[in-house]
Image (cartoon, rainbow, N blue to C red; front, side, top):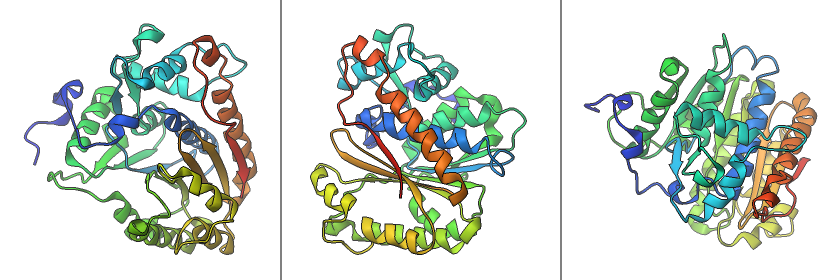
Length: 335
């Protein structure tokens, strides 16, 4: 058991060197991914039944906030994001970073002074805590105990009055690894419509060594479709790693399929009558996101996600600070 309450520790001094997200959080892929998360959360909170009660379950939750050192390649990109937008609409991620980092007292005094990036766990915690009179909950799953301890400290420092609104499993901390994906696989069949599950696996989806991972995601999809119209919503983030060019064949159906790979899980959803918002982009790597929600929400949600991804991509401040978004236009479609 932890001998010190997490909120009594200084999260800025805590380290988790085994956490690979420390090296990639706040990169271009994160900016799109978090924009999609925010678009989904914003949309669902305006619709019943989620407006009354929403239980957000995030796997691979991370440490909540990430340090961006001087000279880090990400700092230039994030300095653009943190600059005040001058476009024709809000940049969701800019506003979310301001709220989350502001809650920790580390919103930069100027764009050149960006040293922190808020991850999705902190963004979501602050967003849900800001909904007045709600009974929304955030449940977070993270593998390593050192990262979980930092996450608890960060959340406690950002929203000390909102402890009942979020939890980091396992609640009875015993300093061992917690497999959030396995937890989702075991429990998704009993989660209803008001649940929203975020899965961010970062795996190479055509590799033989990852077959067990594909089989696990098949079981998760089986559990989802088993619930029919009362199924939870699900966001699945696919990535093909350094061999991102092999993803083109998966995305367009020209590659030979692998067992429980992209094509097989897509067909499993379609055959059960489930469709999703498909978000695709290449930003150094090849990514695709599936946003699975009830069919009557798909069309409007697709428009919302497309709008906010375009605002991010076209953010006029990128050119103003000499940084261009190094990716083709984000594609958002129904599948």
